[in-house]
Structure formats: C-alpha cells, structure tokens
Image 1 (cartoon, rainbow, N blue to C red):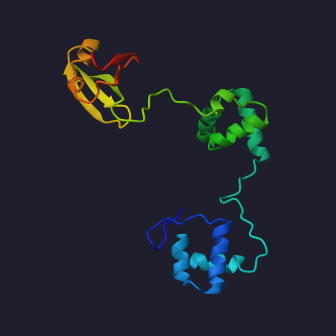
Image 2 (spheres, rainbow, N blue to C red; image 1 turned 90 degrees about the horizontal axis):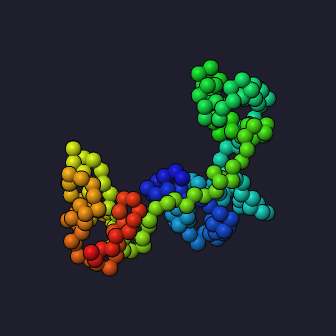
Image 3 (tube, rainbow, N blue to C red; image 1 turned 90 degrees about the vertical axis):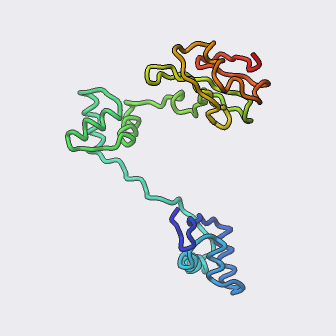
Length: 208
C-alpha cells in the first residue's frame, strides 16, 4: 500500500466503499477532500474512482497485481533436460542454471517439475507448522532458563515466556541445574506460583 499525501497508507477499496464514494460525490454533501480523507485515499484517486464507476451498472473488482507469466516450452525443455542429467531439487537447479546464464527462479522451476511429474506435493511440508515452543498468555506464569558459553564462562539467562523479558542472568563455571536455581532471578518475587523451564525442556517448580 502506497503512502498518501495525508502521511498514511492507501487503503484497499471494496464495493461498499466505492458505492459510498460515488454516492457522496454525486450528492455533493461532502467535499472531494473529505470523501478522500474518509476513505484514506488521495483526492486524485477518489476522482479516478468516481470517473470509472459513476456510470457503471455493476462494480467488478479484479484481483490486483501482475498476471503470471506463462511457462514457455524452452523453460520446460531446459528443466527436464537438466534433471535427466543431474537429478536435483529446484533450489540447486536454479544455481546451476544461473551459472550457465540461464536463470529461472526456483519457484518457477518447482512448478515446472510438478507439471512434468518430477516433483510431488508433500502434505507434511505443505501444512502449517505448529512450532514447538512455549507461549504463555500471562507474564510470570513460565520462565525459561537457557545456558550459553560466554568468555570462558557459562552464562545463565532467565526469560519470561510471555513478555520475553530477561528477568535475570548470571555467570558460572558449569551449566548445572543447581546453578540454574542460583540465578539471581530465582529469588525474585512473583514466581512462586509458576514454573521454570530448563533448557532441556524439563520443568522445575519455582517454589523450590
């Protein structure tokens, strides 16, 4: 969405908003500036909308964006020939073709490979992933304890799961569960009813 002269982003107009613009433009009860301001568009664009749809019997909105470029026979032959000599995935094939000055985007290559039966849709990769992580709704209901090597020492950091706030940290010689509970955040108030989650995923009651 492009910025307008109002310093805001240009909003997408639907049929209802277009009808509203045309109606008030014809009625003359609002200024052109006010019509544009209300819909979050520029006055010039509001005028374009009116000129385009004022006499239209039905408002037809097309899908925005460029039309996809059809795949050519040369691209199909290039991809299939390369796959026969060097079976590989779309990403690696894009690199090889680029070296040969015959660049084809890997998404386009993958589309060709699916059309030719070389690649197949994998449902496990297509589905939306449920990321394995903890996301508590309220602060202080769960804290993470993570370790990292830092200048020859072991850095222990405690993060609140909901807010991602670094509650506390400490430097130790060894990364142990005992040192985890020695972290300064372990004695902070407000966590006695929650849990610590150690780096390996094992819970540790906060009221130790």
